[in-house]
Amino acid sequence: MKDIQFYRSNPWYREDDISYLRIYDAETGVISDADVTDGLIEAPNWSKDGLSLYYNEKGRMVRFDLESRQKTIIDSGFADNCNNDHVLSPDGKRIAISHGSKEDGRSRVYMMPISGGVPKLITPLGPSYLHGWSPDGKTLAYCAERNGEFDIYAIPADGGTEKKLTDSPGLNDGPEYSPDGKYIWYNSVRSGLMQVWRMKCDGSDAERITFDNSRNCWFPHVSPDGRLVSYLAYRAGSISPSEHLPHRRVEIMLMNSDGSGARPIRSLFGGQGTMNVNSWSPDSRRFAFVEYSIKDIGELE
Image 1: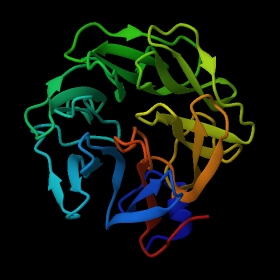
Image 2 (image 1 turned 120 degrees about the vertical axis):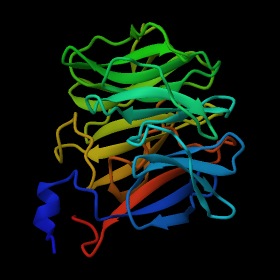
Image 3 (image 1 turned 90 degrees about the vertical axis):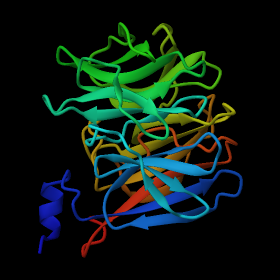
Image 4 (image 1 turned 60 degrees about the horizontal axis):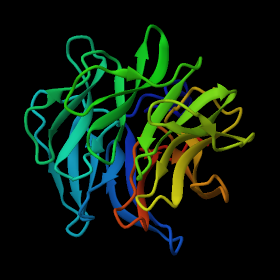
């Protein structure tokens, strides 16, 4: 039997995870349980019709019906190593996934119908980690490592030439489009700690949104009505600002989209996989996230 020290020394070992799929109601503040899985699930997306959640499990994408509580594995052909960076198209008809290709194990972005099918390669270069789809459906935004630097890139949704949007040293990650299509929200370590930023969609006019000296702030998710932003935070000093580890005590934060009113709404055992991608419901009332425990151990802290 593995002990606590094993999991502390091996934070990426997820074989013994138990996953709790939960939903936060932004109007009432109530958190409800949607499902529990004996194993690892990550990063829920909410369907455009409001009836289902999509997440990755054991390298495949899964559709979870919120009413029946039934899971359906989506046929993704050769793409059996999907990670937690996936996004649904604005019309809800397609899903773009990040899959670690067999050639070199590097994550690349692919496209397929929401019901499944043979994925189409979108980003020939890897690693590429998808996070955003423009409201007009024409462009994808993703974090990618090129020449030793992680920056934010955009590419036509059906493939083409990628465009580099950030050029600051250190990690720039988690790009998502605002619902009005005017901005890309993201997180960056350019100020020292990881903080939330936004820029125009061409990469200009970068603007820092959070000024939190006590937290490293990750993955801003703007509600569909543009009013609220949820994000994940690690306590400053607990890990490196550029690390987004699992098996850590983290907080889910909520703020107004002008950066005001930031407050924690949930402290939990999680991190990587909790809410890497936008998980807001289409009516902007709720968002989904995942908490974890370790079988026979519980939480590490």
